[in-house]
Amino acid sequence: MKSLQQKPIRFTTKIKKFTMRFMETSPHKKRRLDIHEFVIERVRDKSPHLTEAVKSHFKISRQAAFKHINTLVKEGYLFAAGKTNNRTYELGKNRFKYLKTVIGPSASEDELWSANFSDLFKGLKSNVASICEYGFTEIVNNALDHSEGTQLNIRVDVSPKEIEISIADNGVGIFNKIQRELKLPNPRLSLLELSKGKYTTDPERHTGEGIFFSSKMFDAFFINSGGLTFEHRNLSKFASLVPDKSEKAGTQVLMILDPLTKRTTKGVFDKFTDRNLGFTKTIVPVELAKFEGGNLISRSQGRRLVMRFEKFKFVVLDFKNVSTIGRPFADEVFRVFARKHKSTSLVSVNETKDIRDTIKSIQRNGL
Image (cartoon, rainbow, N blue to C red):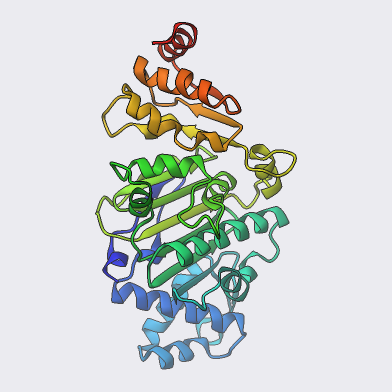
């Protein structure tokens, strides 16, 4: 369980700072979460004598019980009416649910969703609920089937401003597992493979599409594991990320969505699938092919970049944050691979003039 004791990821937006609170698993913070979950459930069930119930159940003072309740009022999870002695409570505009569960043969992502979290999305737009259900079930299923862990921590926060879905396991770590299965020289290259899509360690039961499509549906999508972070942002207001740099195992996923988004699951699928709903197009951030501080020069780097490209009809190579590439690298991608796999079209975007000239030169004259 030690892998769940790491520091929370800190995300910064232009409007506020927040943490993956579900990862705060010290005894004190875990007890705080349990108390808040108890309070919310009692209010949802319209149980009377809320303060006394909290005091009795957790064996704390009346003052401490009231402080916890008041915190939930201040944070918008509860609405209070009346004076202190006769105060009544209703659920507020903000909603949350925290669940700690065991990973085992009986665990099911759809049952976890329907039994514990689906009610949080009542009253929201249908496209928003659909996106959240898709992302939740896909990421939980990945944890259940692939993490090799024993425990799953889930927290969902819903407010008028944003929706956060936080999921963590205490398994071997997604990037370490991909590195092991593909025999990659560095776990950082696992982020590259993850970005392409269509990769799974269990092809008989999975298509490898869940993380790819989930990352495209949410406004911000982060995976943190073993000191590495995979991220995809559809909205620029989710501006920066400071991950936990520890090498501890486990995987943490945070998905954020604007509840007013017009994005739909169908719209995202349509962008990357053909008329037969085949997953035929992908977008690959080329910068993930280089090690930190390195350059993209060699043929071996080119071969790693194009690995599994033949599974797609269209591959968009995004050169954002890449200023230059070596001719051997370009030759391996834009001449060798292109000639060997003519059914796969390569398109480059966000390339600098230097990169564009290198690609054109290779395509015309070769190395």
